[in-house]
Image 1 (cartoon, rainbow, N blue to C red):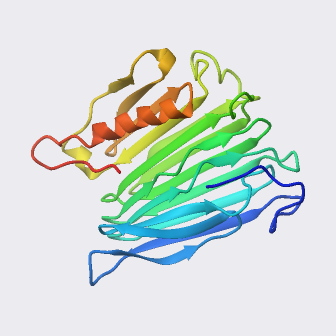
Image 2: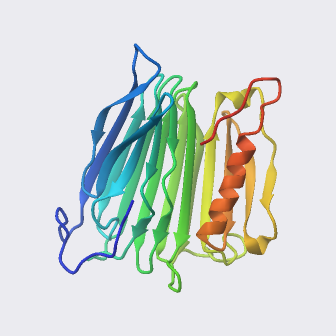
Image 3: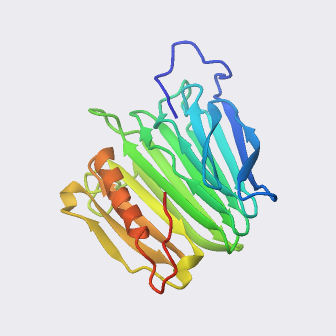
Length: 283
């Protein structure tokens, strides 16, 4: 989302207690064609939703920031559903900038993603930047049908150039066929114990992950891989999960090197699948 520093006066739709907003996206397969339609595209508060040109059968949506957010006290939520047989790709126009708000309350940013049978859902926004003084709680809750394919990329930049990072706590919960596939939490920045130590970020200021869920892994599981060069320049590890799925976790000194690590991981998933089953497609 394209976000700027907050003006002196409250932005439209914002109160002293913060913004309450929920944006909704629904993608549906067109039964008469191979395309995906968007019967629900409902922006709210800071979320302006724009329909992009389709890519093959895939519908594409871009999230554009309509005001500064998230600020302290904001309660923001996005709900996106790819119904049976639909293909949905969601991105953002620019980085999301978490800022100190007019109150001491933390901000929340909750993302709920659902993919039905034989659906495909890609959540690939630009990075989150946690500016000094910000306090954010972010969650992703994902429900997948057993035959769904899913890609999630998230990148966190701790502080703008020359400033201390804000505080961010995240939780990612993924269920496949009603069973928990992944449930993890992380906390960085001011007030988080040990976050900058050798067991966590080791002095780095950028962290991210790439999660791939694809039934193709049942026949062609991946192996653990270490990506990147020296630890000082950032590294990533690819870890197979049960389910079938794979998770790439990366840390780097800055956002540019973090993106390069995740791009390298994406290239790994594009390699041919053994046994002649084609390629696992990651955008």
